[in-house]
Image (cartoon, rainbow, N blue to C red):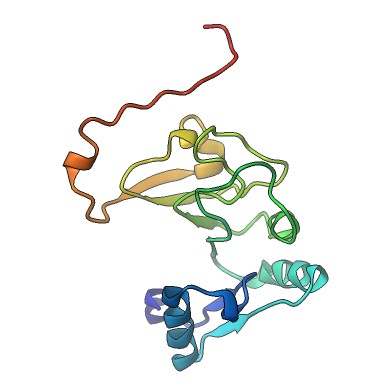
Length: 162
């Protein structure tokens, strides 16, 4: 909605179906409809790929396909959508680029290469040394008190000999 206030033509492409949306997602879908924002729900892999290719006329793509819970390779139709997105249009990822594992930093066969990533509270451990995929990393405060992070200790297990 903020984009529509600044940009004339906003389009939304959702791989999810409205009947499976969370209450929050349903709320934002209703706002999109009230504001006459074009929301597309492709019904097949082929139509998902065609929609992704159609984004060649965009000025900016916002990636919110996947979240931080990625475990293993990206499945269909998301993998094909990532593969067919125009490579010459800047992408801003929400929280983490789709296809990047937020814990291990592992990159699957298909992964968004964002110009910018806006992440919440703290960078994910898997983002370390992944600037090729995250681009400029912007950490946004979402109101989690600092005390929640005071005793936080991170360890990364690896088979590599150090």
